[in-house]
Figure 1 (spheres, one colour):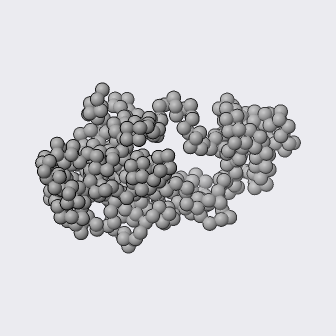
Figure 2: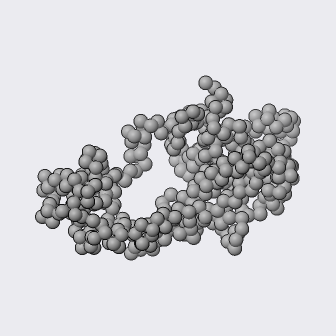
Figure 3: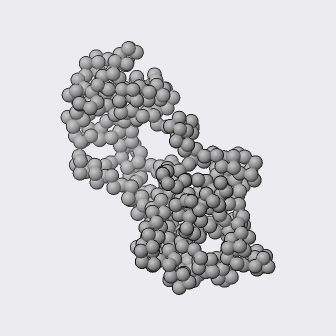
Length: 420
């Protein structure tokens, strides 16, 4: 089946979007493109600065080899256009006549100052949907503040819960705030498209990365409702309803595992099996060998009990690999799971069985690159990689010429004038 035929069968194939975002908003367009929408990435002539974000293919810095760029622009087409020129702005307005969505992540007021704000685009296409992704949103006292990931994670409250209680808060290793904002923006786009189907009206969507991070903390409310505990920074520990802290991350022979030493009716037998294994290895002391798991309750535990358990299990886990421990947990029902590295995930038989990893051909690199696949599948329509991320201006002739009726001479003039 040809790529165009596949695209016609995808969920959102009837819609088209112009993606003006930098690295802060590209996730939104990627999600929509993966669902089949025709997402056209609009870059400055010469390429988007995000193409210079590493890591790079084979470690060679090159705007066409940024793995960050390739990952977040999969399935999109690409054109170049300079919105800082009057001709560029007029061309953009012409493009918006034939699209459903515009996604942008410029500083607040950038498009308005160029006559390309929502009210301007709405006059050109009253059904247009403009989705704006910024650090603090389009309104409020912080709206014009700089907002790198670390600021959004700090002011959104997530950093306060990340790290060890004896040390200052930590930022999560990989930037997350704008990935979450991009995901929320994609959901908002789908809602606005449905609203337009019902009413015929377009609208402006305002997405804040800080709001998106704060949204992650709503699990605190459920913890309070269940246990009357206010979540705090606990590192490798978690607090039980009694306020006692239990360690749940343990080092093992080749990494780390997550483990909860629960008992009672549902977990007592599993814990007994684990202790039997420890005893065979000569690593179960009298305390753990004689422990009554059937009567064990986290609500009645003490800090002293928690520390005793931690020391015994920690000593045993260090003698076993993640696989050994996980295989045992699967067999007997222990609450234990390996802490997977990227290498572990790539080699996972479960991911392999689900076909999660996808090989994408890159003729310009004379290679195939392995990409994460789709976190969802549909019974009636496929999830497919239609194309790799676009090269700089790769689809200029295709889109400007064939689809928007600019003549070849006009395109040449635009290119020579630095407009595209």
